[in-house]
Length: 192
Image (cartoon, rainbow, N blue to C red; front, side, top):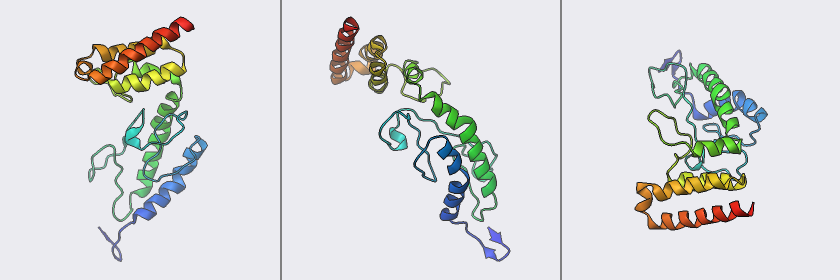
């Protein structure tokens, strides 16, 4: 794009600085203690480590509310090369973080809520924030929550779904692990 004095390219550093200036204060008040200008941690606050986004147990991809014909993909806020829309982009991203992202993240700080999400089956049109019931990953992650809540029935149900699934039958190592954990759940239920 052309500015009055010739081509102007807004640098990534300038965009990051503006994100830090406008967005970081809100995230800090919400309890975040690390800043990365292009992504924010999307993991349970009770989790002691900070995995990369794709490795998080619960994931949400925020979507812009502003119309950007030059870049219609909803999950990416586009800043024009001259920076002329930077203020609008930052404002929209911040409003989505405040209105959607932070409330969603707050729900996942509740272990019972998170466990309930792991117990939901796949459905057409359902947004999945965690792995769906019946998958090995849902059983592993969800049962960790269930054990911390001493909800051995929920842990057993998650692992039983693996045993009963078509995919489980193709993975004998999953079945072995599932049966061992189911037995442990039965033991714990008897002890409590």
